[in-house]
Amino acid sequence: MLVFQNTILSLVASVQIASYNMVRIGDWIEMPSLNADGDVIDISLHTVTVQNWDKTLTTIPTNKLITDTFKTGVVCKIQEHDELSAVY
Image (tube, rainbow, N blue to C red; front, side):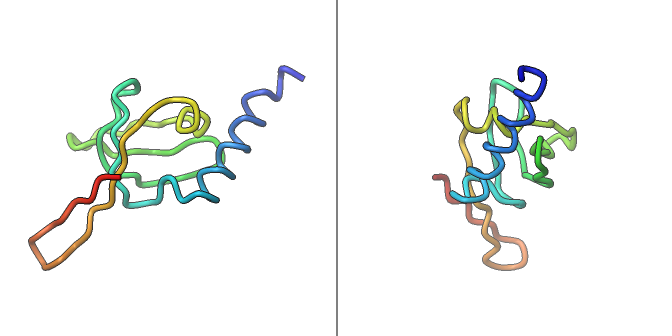
């Protein structure tokens, strides 16, 4: 049963992330423990991909979003060049 432990944890975490709208594509996320600080560009069953401000990609296992701490926010476009960030 230990063979499927990560798969089961990822599945449960993905359901929780989707159910509670913890993270959505386009959200800003900061998770210093995994060197992630940027926009969420993909959410899959096992991973969440973040494009950092320096254009590098960080892949976060979905179960880390349930077990570890992170900051998230939504970047809202007000006008063509103005941005407003809301941190939750």
